[in-house]
Length: 278
Image 1 (tube, rainbow, N blue to C red):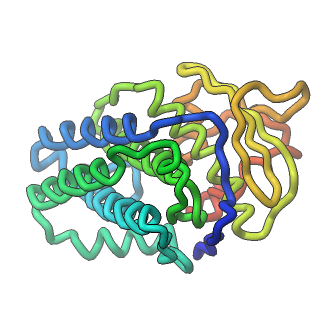
Image 2: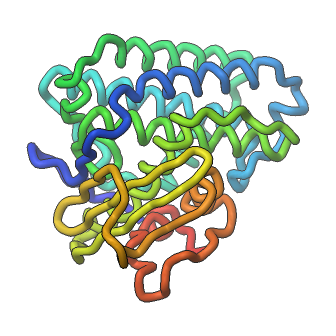
């Protein structure tokens, strides 16, 4: 499926009073991941990840390209000229092609590029104030606040850290702010892709998670708005352990159904975008 991002001054997604400074969890998570893989031997770098067909080195190579895109998007947005390069982007085929194109790199080269791209992204986020976090930049759904862009980047790298670590018998540390940002964003992303494809059916999905506690409402329609706090009684609600919900919404594990079948549409089309239906 090719993306058809929504560009312009009226962002498709908006988040209220949540994750004020995503730079802290973003930078911490990437530093931890870089430290983990820097200690891997050749066999571990070549071992399969949870991403079908990708080794550990392939996943890190993918994160290099995403880091580079985030830095470019941030620079364009902060310069007042948000980029528009993802129109027609295929989120399944294109990343695979990019990884295939650099598979002749050595492990040392891949790790060096990962560290460089992490540093560049951290530098791009330094010193942002409230106005900076609200500045629009490009991400897969289109133009959205840099705050939401950073949350997308946290979720993507957080789930890929687990894609690498868990098959090797390593359990990454759980940081509450990383898990919360990942859960809020992946729950938001499916409805956002539905809206991008023209499905603007109104509705509200509540997320009520534990370990860490996450309690938000995602209001859907022509715009997607995330609000803090519990939803009114009777609102369709996705409940459970926060980590398990991120894993399920990211198609890494079964998602325990806590929604009635008639309410499943509230999860959006993330599976369609990534060619996943399980």
